[in-house]
Image (cartoon, rainbow, N blue to C red; front, side, top):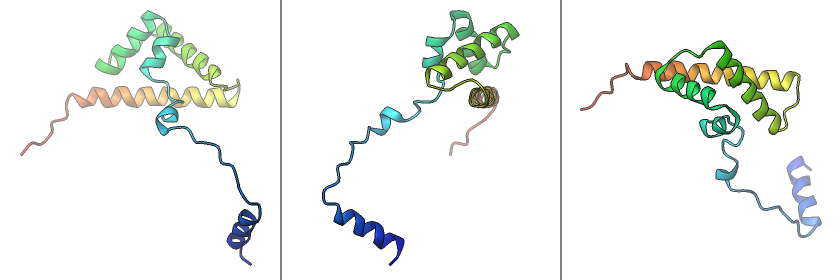
Length: 117
C-alpha cells in the first residue's frame, strides 16, 4: 500500500477530525515586514523623517541616524521573538538590503519613462 493510501486510511479510520480555523491571509500577510507604519512606532521622529526622505528622494542617511534606525529594527525584531545571535544579525542584514534596494529603485524610478500608445 502506498503512503498516500495509508494516510487516507488513517484519516477515515479516526472519524471526525477537528481543524482549527485558519486566520485570514490579510491578517498574516506582511506581518513580519518592517514597514514605514511600524517604523513610526519604533523610531524617533528624526530617524523616521530621515528614513522617509531617504526612501522617497534618495537622501543619504547620517551614520548616527542609521544607528538609531538599526536599533529600532532590532527592537522590532526582538518584539517579534527574534533572539540575539544569528537570527537577529541575519534579519538586520536582510532589512538593510531591503532598504538599500528600495532606495535604489526609488532613485531610479524618477528616470523611468513609461511607454503610452
